[in-house]
Length: 474
Ligand code: SF4
Ligand code: SF4
Image (cartoon, rainbow, N blue to C red; front, side, top):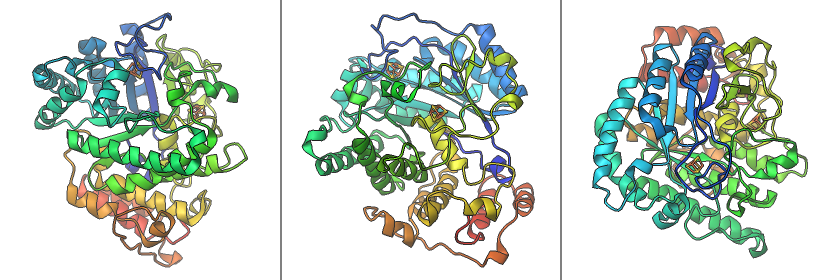
């Protein structure tokens, strides 16, 4: 949940590493093979290995590091040390999260105290983003799936304490058939029924997240073992054969279309990281009979890397046959130069790849690159809207309170986008195209960024740069 716009706008593709510090977990999510009770070999990354991974990441210019699990907070003191070390080593974006087990239990009063201690230690360590899993709009469904009774009430008690301390956790939605409570219908109920129910379920989910007090949300796309069909082998144990996360191609198309429709309705109420341009690309991918024809290729194995609990690097969590060896000796310069993979929907890598797509590469912001924006003008409008929204959302900084006025202003889609996505209830904000002769150059943007102070002034410079670009350019 990060967008390194300053780096992108001067033509640098920021590197990202997802580090699996453990595959142990104390929750029982049926859609995950790392759940407690599953008989499998478990491991936790040794401390020395983790420190070497962080150190090497920092030396290699990695900008974002995510500590994932299993349950990352099983050893919160050690995790806090890792976050601090990453921050002190110069890694700008650090994130981790939890299934919320420490907030669960029959009496949620202890949750506030637990949140206070946790927020203090993570903030002091320098953590930027913290997620809490929330898989259903219906508390009973979520708690039953996780095997964590009382966790929803506990999270509701914990969130104000986090906010008071200066931390704004994100609701992390793993898309399953249970996202709205009652299971989404199966294919035999017909595509229209599925699409309608999916929209209703998503509306219930985002409304619940807002009611609970979340100010940021992120959507994890369904990952099932059907990925194996595409020649993938998961080294990351998140997918499973559960029917909860198995969707047919038409169902995925309807599910992603529902996301594209519903997200704009809630963008003014809660900072939703999920980019509409990315979701739109997935709709196009699942609308075609050709495999994976649309969207920008994933930067997994190019700029993004997954590290397993042994400290070995892989292009991502799903290309497990491509062991790149110990991460501590990985030479990023020897990785693939051009992204090409579209074999799965892992949002951790697909969403930032899509957001970076139009400007990634040596010719950042050049009209030539911009004109190659896949998906045409409508995708361009969505992408511009995503960038504008990301700025208004404070680049999803989990240590900043939302600016609701800016969110409202940035949530209004341009007129052409409204025509393409008619279910949005937001008001249209005009796009101000200028002639091609006024196109902003990378050098000009760089100069602006250097001159501008951090915060709103820099954001304004970026917005202005985007506005000055000709229509048909991204
Ligand atoms: S989805 Fe997360 S919380 Fe649930 S079992 Fe898997 S690792 Fe644990
Ligand atoms: S699309 Fe990305 S995350 Fe998925 S298999 Fe390819 S490189 Fe890995």
